[in-house]
Amino acid sequence: MNVEKVLIAGAGQMGAGIAQVAAQAGLAVVMTDVADEFIARGVDAIRKNLARQVEKGKLQPAESEAVFARITTSLDLAAGADADLFIEAAPEVLAVKRELVEAAAQTLRPEAVLATNTSSLSVTKLATYTGRPQSFVGIHFFNPVPAMALVEVVRGLETSDETVATARAFAERCGKTPITVADSPGFVVNRILFPMINEAVFALQEGVASAEEIDAGMKLGANHPMGPLALADLVGLDTTLAILETLHGELGDPKYRPCPLLRRYVAAGKLGRKAGAGFYSYR
Image 1 (cartoon, rainbow, N blue to C red):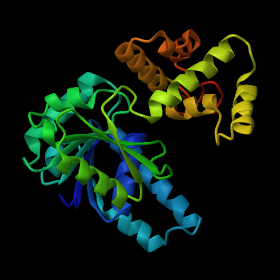
Image 2 (cartoon, helix red, strand yellow):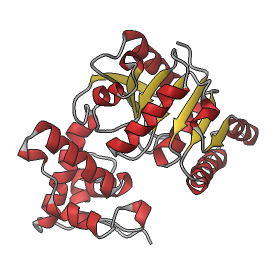
Image 3 (cartoon, rainbow, N blue to C red):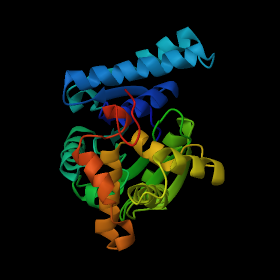
């Protein structure tokens, strides 16, 4: 299927980022959320990102306005009922995602492709809630969406070849490089990445080194562009914990057990950049 219009459920970091890259690819975008304040934040984030591109000379002012004009917003999924592709970009809570994909399956036409941006939940399980699992696929963008080149296209147990091809073509049109992966906890990147972040938190908890020294070690010793603790702050410590809990629960291996220090930070509301404090202070 040729995708020309996208309906995105969620106006947070991921949803707004997906809306931006889709609009920059020339697609019509409808971005929805449950409250006007969330939509306003998403719209503001897109405006700021586009303004930065203009300041850096990567985008002309007229192009920026054209991109923004391709994005409409609504509190109702029905505003995008004629979309070719639906992507849910809600928090990593199964009940929330289930409600959205069920609603999308009832709202969009039968030939539309339905997708989730989940970073850890089962695509196969989410597909069962739609009644058309062959048309359901994972399209996992990475944060920050405009800057990150990779998209994991996740094939559920019943996802059709045509649906996978549509998802890959959409990712490529958005300027991303897709890799096709099987539906397994954490997929490829997070299954490898988050145990490393977790081990960094254990090292911090055990006093092996300070947060700054741990991150400097991985940046300078492993050539990582960002240290694991700073990356956790960027992702969100609540999201980091949720992904580790999914890996631990689904795979049953104690090596995925979330570090107790991570749990304490989340319990204290120190969720990273979005909260102003995590392993580092952002105030």
